[in-house]
Length: 48
Image 1 (cartoon, rainbow, N blue to C red):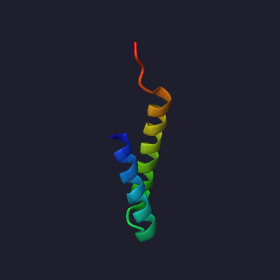
Image 2: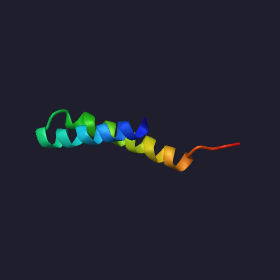
Image 3: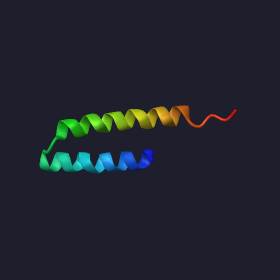
Image 4: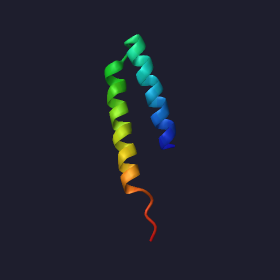
């Protein structure tokens, strides 16, 4: 799920850079996805 979100946002980000359409919003979403990815990577799946 997270990888799908990251890939989609990267595609939209590149399209936004190319076509200059809603680039600001796409950059914000990309930063949020990157933060979520880092949190998931650092936190990982904790087993008890």
